[in-house]
Length: 118
Image 1 (cartoon, rainbow, N blue to C red):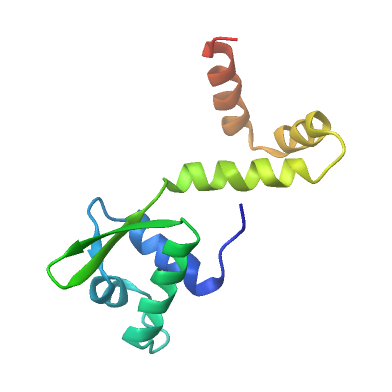
Image 2: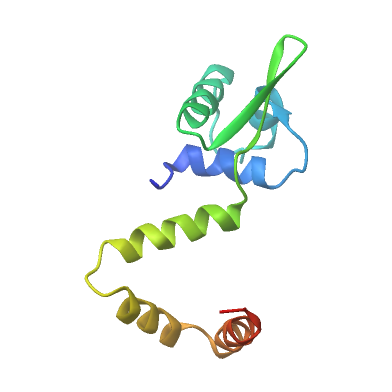
């Protein structure tokens, strides 16, 4: 799993923030306004994200509507798994990660692990 470029990440943030598939125009209208972006640029980004299996699309009338292919949490979990795969010792990397968590997050993780069936 690869990371996302800046504009791809912004587009995915828009898609992850809605519960329904949305059009290119709706994505464009919801992007941060600090830069002017062309409709065709956003359309190309969405087409690329579809080709990379980051988004699914469905035809609504004459327009494509897009939705994330997976949740933000599933995407982050995939990135974490990829990162862990680059090291020699996944357990050691997980331990270092766990040690860096704020106390409330480490307690929540410990509670989830205690509840999980083995």
